[in-house]
Image (cartoon, rainbow, N blue to C red; front, side):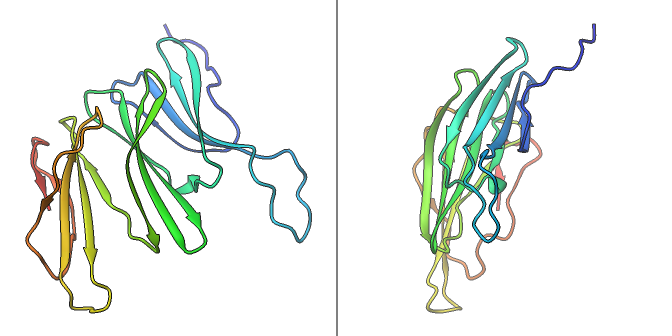
Length: 193
């Protein structure tokens, strides 16, 4: 039986994603301030920034508050296959410092747990590649010596499981170009860099 439409979240939804089972929908939302905009001033800060989690089975809507300095337009949501756990990336700007944070969002309990942070002036973010068939992700961290354009890159890899377990860091052989492309084997069990 097809039910009528139901409003889950409205007003300033920047992006959304559904879990692999289709049970949960996670939306990135910014609630604007009700203060009027004044000419020649900065726009008023939003009242709230949050992730809204809709459970289609229970029919409930819950939210997770995010800090006001998070740049929501850059937030990404990737789901671990066969789970209701999402990897959420956020970015904050403070002067010349950029901070990237990765959190695990448990849709069933609406809890978020930080698993990685990278901070620095104009810092390139770490990357997480989530397998499309197996509930595992790989964190790729690349660093190089900026004083020499021909310097070698150091690349570290770590596995991440949906329960938040980060494996031991493994180093790739040094290379000049760094990580060009990340993929998975057809069975989703082997990462290819």
